Length: 201
Image 1 (tube, helix red, strand yellow):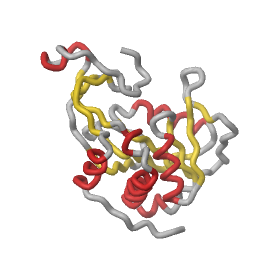
Image 2 (cartoon, one colour):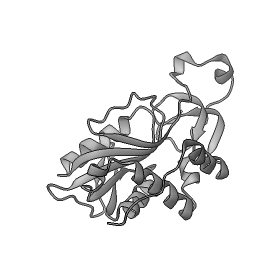
Image 3 (spheres, one colour):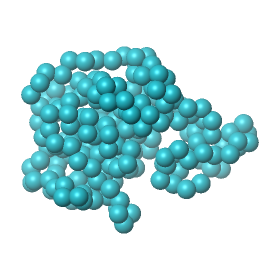
């Protein structure tokens, strides 16, 4: 396996988001159902292949070495995790696939399959509550894989997301999020935008 050496400091990661106009301000309804004045549109930061490769290589370099060398599959939840999942597969030199929700529950489709004993990295673009990542891990386990690590470009959970395996994020951000009934007045005064969320406002 190719040695992975690229490291990035938090300010360098945020510079990538700003350069791609992926760090947005306003009133956003997140896929978790919570509200925020900030939104990271990872689809924008990942739309440039060279930038996506840099970020994935840096994230792969942060994985614990003992786990990194065991991983032989990458699985990401669709839609948000598809691009970073593919780039993580490239960085780790293993196959990458994704789970999706044809009937509301994550599953492997499109001919994707896992072999018993496959050591899987589950990767997301952004983790807020961790719910979709947890659901993806359940689907991976059901398909016969063993998730040995989880990763994300951005951890917005303030350290609260738990997956039962080591979790690595390229950068952790602590923009506050709010339930619908606890919005501050300045946020409540603005209409909520649903930027790529699976939850309808």
